[in-house]
Image (cartoon, rainbow, N blue to C red):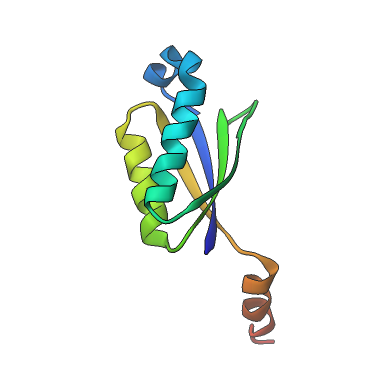
Length: 98
């Protein structure tokens, strides 16, 4: 599984339905699981982003599908970051020249 961080901002439409938070979280978990992923956590945040999601997906295609589906809902915009574990990044770093 690959780890992804989704940095999200609520749209005006998304702000109108804030009281639906529990239902929205469940729909997101359902979509993640349907795509073969696993939700690790979600946090409302202060600052530049309103919501941060930490999710594992089997591949980038599944992560992109989730990001596109989320954007199509009209309630959130997302910025997606691929996160690398030490087991994934150490071989890359140690193979660098010089």
